[in-house]
Length: 143
Image (cartoon, rainbow, N blue to C red):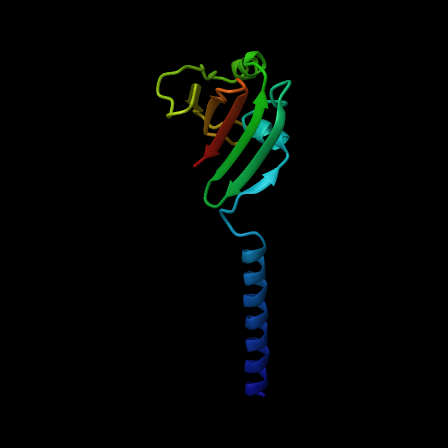
């Protein structure tokens, strides 16, 4: 009788281990997944993404904190700057402190955390010299 119970418990433990491995490898923690960009907007308390953007790609990554990214193209910065001005505090685009190859950038910390969940927001704008096209990369996270 005791041996039978041990076998049943062993089978259940193997099943739980198998299920845990399946879950871990079907969506590993910390792996970036594509999301609808409206989720990024909500994370930084905005009703929508900036107007007139194209080729938008957004991602979500979560382990102990959450990281979201948004990348898109725009013809000009007017709509992006208007979108940024709705944040409190509003990030101010500038050239100071930007990484190499970045034309303009800004970042802001939110204290307290935004209702959508973000503690920090950053934006980088790159311009393709040949075409003048603008690529915008935004990141937001909480810790």
